[in-house]
Length: 55
Image (cartoon, rainbow, N blue to C red; front, top):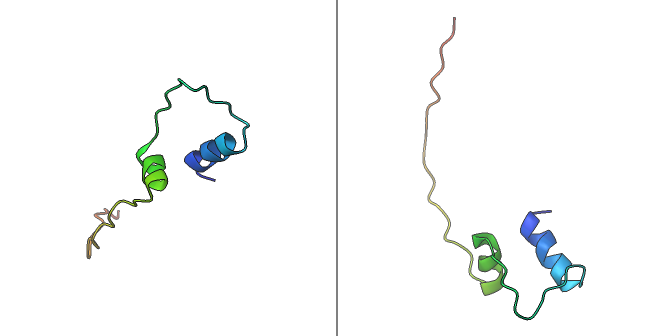
């Protein structure tokens, strides 16, 4: 389970208490989920080569 999912689950099930004036720093992943705004997909990088030396 991703860490942000566990964090949100703990908050929503009241396992982790949050004070009214407490500030919580969220990652970009959490922010995207809460705002229902997923980051844009990246384009396909195409073909690539992996350099290697044999011998």
